[in-house]
Amino acid sequence: MDILLVAVGEVDSKLIETLKFDLARAFKKKVWIGRGMPPPDYAFNKKRNQYLSTAILKAMMEKKEYATYEKILGIIDLDLYVPRLNFVFGEANQRVAIISLTRLRYEFYNLPKDQGLFRRRVLTEAVHELGHTYGVRHCGNPHCVMFFSNSLIDTDMKGPAFCQRCKNKLSNSL
Image 1: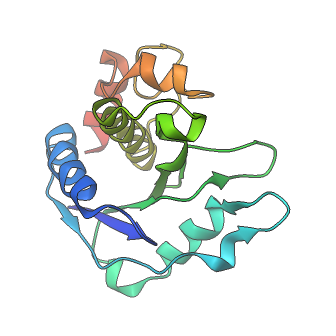
Image 2: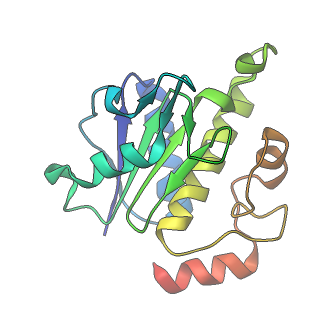
């Protein structure tokens, strides 16, 4: 079974190509790039100036053209949230996940651009959310990709690799 990457709104195609290659290596599965979705105006919350990630996951689940893929990862360049949290880097259910690029960039925090670090963060959050689709829960090891990221410090500390325990859980579901 394969993984499908889907741009939600405007997303850099080179970044998606790089992510496709990196995720194929990380999960040892075929990764495809699907036809993108339009910007998710239906998920916009004016009060927060953010997009509800759960609504976008639901819309992705309803796309018939994505139905033949085992897992679907949406990539969006808009700020995401879920109720009770200020923001999220991503969200996942059993089959569909989404990551936001917005807060993974240094420029969001008025810091100088660092493309290498940005790409590592994107891979880290993509692996984390896809890990959830394979049933791997949050891990207490701050160096494991499945550790919950409350900030970029957490994302940078953990990196894109699974700890041995989570790697074992993942291999049981692949």
